[in-house]
Figure 1 (tube, rainbow, N blue to C red):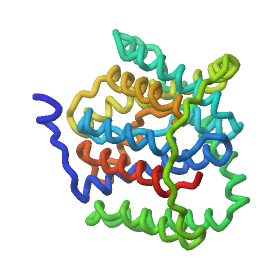
Figure 2 (spheres, rainbow, N blue to C red):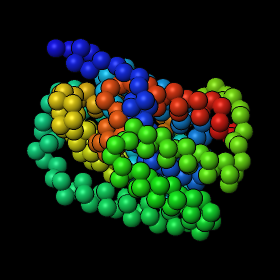
Figure 3 (cartoon, one colour):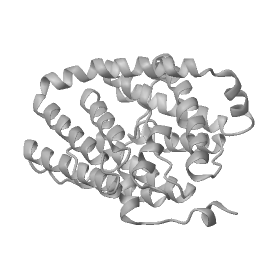
Figure 4 (cartoon, rainbow, N blue to C red):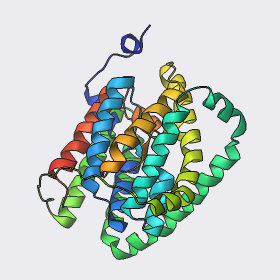
Length: 300
């Protein structure tokens, strides 16, 4: 039985709600990176949108995309420039494209202990918490608005009879709160992406500060855990090497043109599934939302 036959595409309210299930991870990281670096959020959103649609059509499952968290947290904490980010994306793209061939993941599963992954996740969480304190102090009104949205989310989550509407309602509340605090965002078309060419020093710096911590986290969480979760949720086998290949391709084709390093994620898959995503239609919805934001509702 082919994947297409086993999991036909659907474009329902449930898929639309599920498409928003990982926005709480993606959007804050993208905006935070754009605030502290010279990365242009419009190009990041554009390439997220393009690859969300591609992965939805390719896997026909709600396989999520997320910013590479180790890279994002280090950029937020240290203000890394776009050249170094591009270098990291290119190197990571090559690594995961190569790992997508052969029996690498069978060997990796035996030799990478879970304690290493948990330690990296804890360290990144602490760095992100430290960086977030500064944003809270500068903009307490947004912090309060965020708390209100979280409370609304928790209340809605208790009503299991309306799971398809909860994510949509939370997003609507967030939009209303954002417009009330900052007004309607300006509408402007995005110019053509420009090629970002890293210099040799960008590669040497990226290898030590960005690439090494991200490789382990991506292998464990974005590839192995995501592959396992697809079996649990959909009873379908998405091999780790296939996930690795798409991670490699998306970074090599996006990051040099202003995108941000991307990967899949088990947490994002669980979130999208929880809010109703069952097919690649959810990814198509998410992609269209990101492309719309990139083209019309982000400032230069």
